[in-house]
Amino acid sequence: MKILQKLFRKNKWKDERKEDGFSNEKAQLVLAFCGKELLNSENIDGLIKEYPNATVISATTSGEVFDDCMYDSSISLTAIELEKTEIKIKLGNINSYKNSNELGSNLMAEVDKEGLQYVMVISDGNLINGSELVEGIRSSNSTNVLITGGLAGDGARFESTLVGVNEDIKEGNVVLIGFYGESIRVGHGSLGGWDAFGHERTITKAEKNVLFELDGKSALKLYKEYLGDYAAELPSSALLFPLSIGAEGDAVKNVRTILSIDEENQSMTFAGNMPVGSKVRLMKANFDKLIDAASGAAESALDISKTKPELAILISCVGRKLVLNERVEEELERAKSIFGDDAFLTGFYSYGEISPMIERAKCELMNQTMTITTLTEI
Image 1 (cartoon, rainbow, N blue to C red):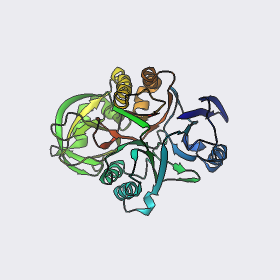
Image 2 (cartoon, one colour):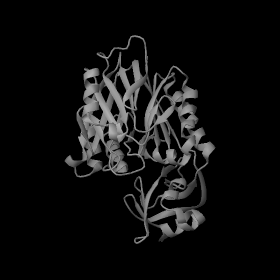
Image 3 (cartoon, helix red, strand yellow):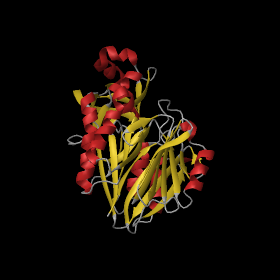
């Protein structure tokens, strides 16, 4: 694997880094994570001409990762020349399907399974229901290959997101990138670092990602009681207090970010489905543990792949960015310290992360995590 990286910022490309022998003409895959105002046909056409034999996969973000730094309103570009690995790409759009589950199921069913080692998912983060998309993808993952990825972002606006394959840049797009062959080694890790507190409660009324009742009582009323003075700052303060969610007895819990509240209906809308019967607990930010989680995710990826990564793709939640604020780059620096200076780091801040919670588990839609995928050819 040979890699080139560069950053477009303030109307010019800079900070180029590439490995010896990298060839623009031999690159098969270009990842372009972009501020929304920069993801347009003019910029993408320029990349298609620059890397004529590559497929350009693009997505808008809530912050672009370039090495161990985070930028807004930039393009973080990574061009990849795979020497022993084949890739195959499938693209679908939500407007062609009944729902996100059907889109995920049909798109994954189209993926050639022979020799398939890993699938990367880059999805719209606004029109797509991430929980349903992941459920659909899992239903067609007949060979149980590793699946990771993330949902595109739109800063902290939550208005619209874009995903593209070459010139096809649209809202509602979902891209699956399949990696084939015995030479690719993939690691993964995903951790949050949030502290749980308060009583565990059961979801007794919910519709998809809208929560109405916990233990038969108004979920919003209970939530406000726990928040105390922070309740007056809703919905913005909700980023500091997500919910853990899982089945009774689960050793590892997922996390759900609160997107909005509805005073009239006494409901709370989350960035992922809230199934009735699930167990939930309130969580709060512990800044040091959030940053430490990036180290843990990186170490997990190393343990699984058993190789030092050539490329690490870091997908962290927009909620973490807003909570960590000026300390946000510390989590990127922690990951970099684990992987070493030789590794190329890219990624973005997202509206949802896709990864198994533990090794050999099925992929899940995550919120409020640092999710890392590492790639190496041997």
